Length: 226
Image 1 (cartoon, rainbow, N blue to C red):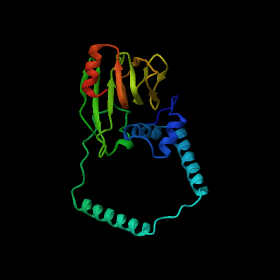
Image 2 (tube, one colour):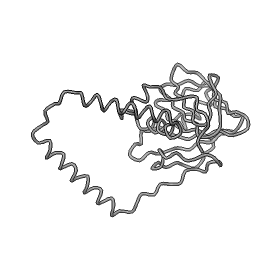
Image 3 (cartoon, helix red, strand yellow):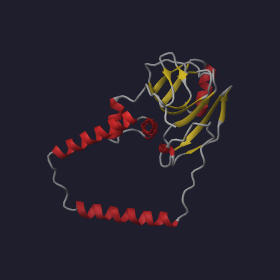
Image 4 (cartoon, rainbow, N blue to C red):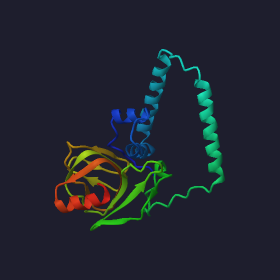
């Protein structure tokens, strides 16, 4: 079920980096989750890719190395040999995602990822570590927070991207609902509070660390890599 209204989107700079293939894995996946839910951002990324293709067509051609074709064919042969080996092996089994409430759908962008069971983070708060094949550096996790509960106040030593999958929260700046996207950095100091009536589930990627105000909150954050 798609969200009826999306009010918060990635900015053009982030979408351009996505279209150009220049985003780190965790940030890319959270942005792609947003695109699944947001037709306007999908259209914008398609436009940016088309513009990029047109610019490439207008570039002055550069001479290739004499052995460029042979090198390309050799790489294709190597890839085909690798795929053949993979085909003979048992398919990789991806653990089922942690249970979600009715109406929440596991994003297609995370189809190849695995996630841990829900783990206790605090009263009314749980989290799940999301692992990305081939990208152990990606700091990606799910947060599941009950109605009326909240994360401790914090800022950021780096960048935090959050995509709402289910429910709503308000962080003192704005209300974020299903499909909404948020990017926070060191200039943002906030405290996400889940709205009454429903729990909230988000997928988040952190580049760097969250900096919580309290010592106990910092200790809990260090345990889960926030």
